[in-house]
Length: 285
Ligand SMILES: [Zn+2]
Image (cartoon, rainbow, N blue to C red; front, side):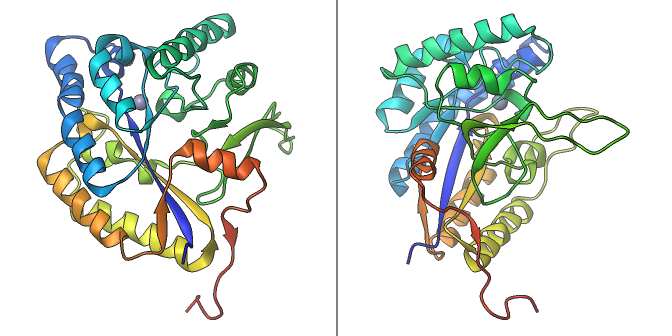
C-alpha cells in the first residue's frame, strides 16, 4: 500500500556556503571542498538503493565543479535552484536578486538541458520579492517554508504583519510549496560552527527522530510528503553515512515511495490530495 512519499534532497553548497559566511580562508573552503569529494559515495548509495532525489545546486557550484554536477544529472537526479553564491536573504536589492536568479536559472538550463522546475532559498530565507521572481521565471515549486509538515500547499506572498494588529494574509501564488524543517536537515544536528552550532549529535538520535516523523506521517496522514535535507559536506562522513544506510533500511519497512520534488509538484498541481490528516480510530493514546 502506498501511504506516503519520502523525498531525499541534497543541497550541494560546496564552497558557496562559506562565501556566504565570509569565511574564505583555506580551512573553511576545504570544508566546502569535502562536499564535492563526497559526491561519488552519495551517488553510489542512491544508485544502489534505486532512489531518485532532488539536488539544489548554487550556480557557483555548477561553475566550480561542472563534471561532478554533470554526474548528478546523468544519474537521473533533479537539479533545482539554490542561489548563485548561497546569497543571504536581504543582502541583495530586488534588481540584484532578479539578476542572481536569472544567472542561476541559465546555468541549470545549460547543465541539464531544461529549465529548473523548483527552488530552495539558501538558509530557507525568502525576501518579499522572491516568490514573485519565481513566478516570473515560471518555476513550479519552492521548498523553503515551514507552515506544514507533510502537506504541500500554494505559497502565499504579500502578507502584512503590523505589530499592533492581526496579520493580514496576502495572495496565494501559483507556486507549489513543498515544506521543509530544520529538524529534518542534517546540517544543524551534525555540523560544528564555532560559537553558532554545537553539532556532533549522535547519529542514532537524529535518525531515530526522523523515523518517528515518518512513523507519525504514515499513521495519521493520507499521502503525506516528507522532505529530508542533506548537505554532502555534512552527510558525507563515515558514521553519518552508515547511519543513513541503516535509516534507509528501517524506512523500507514503511509503505512509502521515493520521489523527486518536481514529481510531487506535478501531482499536486494536477489535483492530487497530498498530506490529508486521516488518523485511524484510537491513534491518540
Ligand atoms: Zn544551502
